[in-house]
Amino acid sequence: MAATLEFRSQRIAGWYVRAALPLFVLQVVVGLWLVSNYVVSLPQGLVDVFPFATAREIHTNLLVLWMLLGFMGGTYFVVPEETRSEIFSERVALVQLVLLLGAGVAAIAGFLFGWTKGRPLLEMPRPLSAVVVVAALLFLANVALTMIRARRWTAIQGTLLAGLVFLALLYLFALPVFRNEIVDWYYWWWVIHLWVEGAWELVAGALMAFVLLRLSGVERARIEKWLYIEIGLVLFTGIVGTGHHYYWIGAPRYWLWWGGIFSALEPAPILLMVVDALRAARERRRETGEPLLWTYAVGCAVFHFVGAGVFGFLHTLPQINRYTHGSQVTASHGHLAFFGAYALLNLTMFYFALARLRGIERLDERRGRVAFWTMCISMLVMGLGFGVAGVLQSYIERVLGLGFMTAQGYMRLWLGVVGAAGLCFLAGVLLAARDLFGLRPASQTPSP
Image (tube, rainbow, N blue to C red; front, side):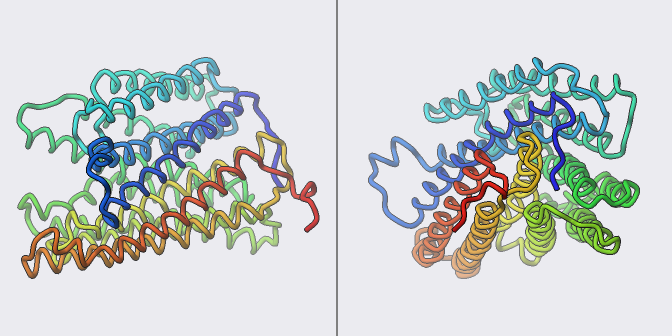
């Protein structure tokens, strides 16, 4: 059974979720445009107006923006319950949301006119980056002051705050533009990889722990045990795990094994946390309730472990990465990992928070289930399509030594599969967004 809302300021989360969902939809639409460039020959006039590189900037920056908004909305829902107090300032939280959305919209408009820094995922021009920094500082101050004022610390809120501070500090290293391009990309590389392998993992672990604690009703110590393991792994493997990329900078060989193994272990605690919470709830014969939320949580943990952990480990082995680096195999790994680790986590949190914000005791889960399976199956097919296309690309270009356009001809079929699966994925995302915007209690479901 879903609990009712305990704190008024938790309603802030609803604004963030409503802002994040349309951006998620737009990101998928732009992704479809990108894959169409591989499948059909578009008119040159159209390509000149909306080039591939610009669409890619918009696609990846929308990913970062909607996921960050989701994390922040989740934080504003979790912190009041963990601290047993209202958020320090609701007004600051809304101002921060306006600043982030304004900077994001301005950046996307700027990309269309060539206003960009040019570094993947961090293309936002410096004046807009400054606005993001101000918004991030407001967010951290608001959350930290709430926790300090409440004087009630838990492992979940501590992990959450640590992940958010880590995330914001790393962003500062992305602001300077160095004249030496190697130095410039060196700092870019660390920011991106420590975001994904460090800060975001901490935030994901804390949000998942909070949801499982409320869903399963098991003792807090049991959930926090896995959270401590996650913290330990992130602190150690978040830095060591980035070593699996050192193949390309000539570092000693042991870094490749250390980096590959430890980066693959990072998602393990979240998977074990979900399994352990589910088993504990069943052992106690407690009604687990809200099966839709369990479905999203288990899907998140499995996709996270397979897409980010197992696939990431295999893809970054030097014997494989020598051929597949930067190919469509990377796109396959990226889509599976980001969807499992962070998109499904955000959707789990969205369903959890919105049900309580609307006071719904038991959800009508039919649309949410269809959306979940449509998105998951489509994403698996997309991962497969990208993967096969990437293997073909690697073999034709890097083993046979043939040209880029020769490889594209053989890849077209599989990228067409990606496009078809992408359309299905878009249908799943639209259904999930519609369901979240109009959540209904099960009792009010019209009879079939």
